[in-house]
Length: 178
Image (tube, rainbow, N blue to C red):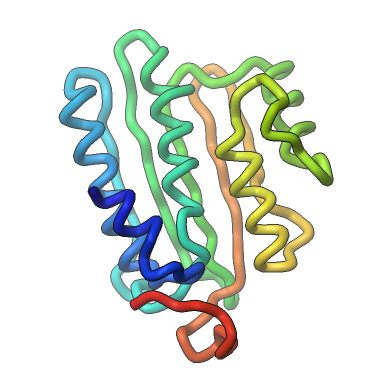
């Protein structure tokens, strides 16, 4: 229910961080009920960032990826961390898991796929959520870099930074929710 409400959110592309945080909390609460024995999570998004607007659905695919490709397949499970900070006019987001991590070859292949100019949905290998988020960050924010991904036996970290934008700074012709 959370997911559909935020996905539709009056067709808006931009939402306040407070709304994205609620969405992530809702998603993780549901998943924790399903994976009670193997998944823990911590969300560290300071309330004072709540009125900054971001492109909707940037975090949820990263969290979903951490659960399905990190925590779910690791014996004994693990923890997902969602962290946001404001640094010099930018928002920095980190989604980190203590899951099984990727091999250097898997990481290299994923990085190759997200950096392609025109990634195809039909290409195999999973990670489409990451490819999509990366593409949207580069397109909507006109940022040369999208996602930075590091991974090893201790888990995976996906980080990105985007400029802080208030409701007023988003152009009149952009659709806004909230």
